[in-house]
Image 1 (tube, rainbow, N blue to C red):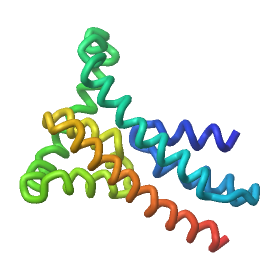
Image 2 (image 1 turned 90 degrees about the vertical axis):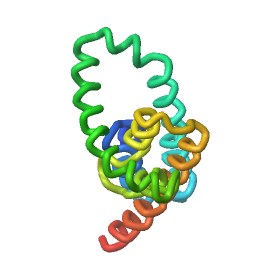
Image 3 (image 1 turned 90 degrees about the horizontal axis):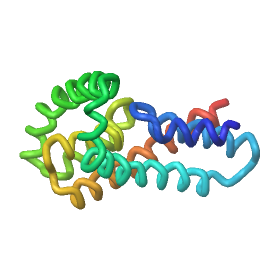
Image 4 (image 1 turned 180 degrees about the horizontal axis):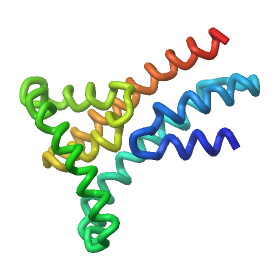
Length: 156
């Protein structure tokens, strides 16, 4: 059950691997299992999520906007993305796709693959370069969360 919960947390917006990875590491440690295969599963799942987000935004978003509940949620979320995009655009002009990578790499809620993909879509950035930057950011965030989690679990 803990394994399933960690995978679900990994694909949820705002939580992503920042929430799923500590849960799956805890599962591996409690069951005396190697951490790396579980780390790889969560990392790959979070990276594959980028494809899903871009596909959804590029092809399905327009159709879903006809639904009032979706439109309400999306408008609220896009307002948040717009606010983040103002600062992000300044950083992007200065250091390019590295800014997107670093934004996603910050292991805080709301800075992962979901928001990075929305920023790239919203700002109409190159998909391939955005994917690479976001995937690298997710990987960096994964290692940061892994090392923090290992330190926390070893303390107990």
